[in-house]
Length: 116
Image 1 (cartoon, rainbow, N blue to C red):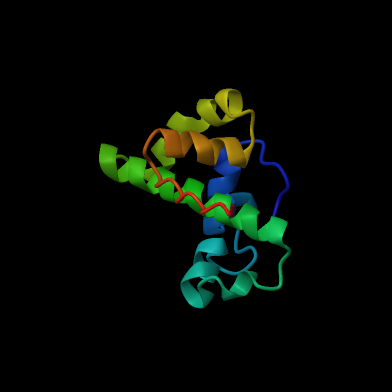
Image 2 (cartoon, rainbow, N blue to C red; image 1 turned 90 degrees about the horizontal axis):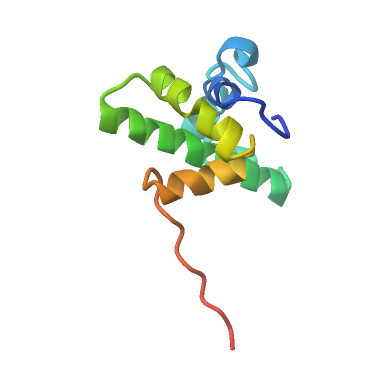
């Protein structure tokens, strides 16, 4: 798991266990961890790390939705959104996840109730 990703491609590679992240942390990357173990594989991680994984997952879901909506391969969508990640989102996963929410690519979280 990286702290800051220099490109959207690196997020994509790490999630699917491709290229420079080949078979990390297991064959198939984080996607395979999610398929095999759901969220239980994350339980020994800190809250910050859990949030990090959650944001990565949201970004991947946004990429998938855009690929389906446009009928484009996921790799092409990553190429298209690379500039947004680099410039508008300043290479931060939190800003990219927020941007994707604003674009309707991922659902916005429900507001939490406040105590009085």
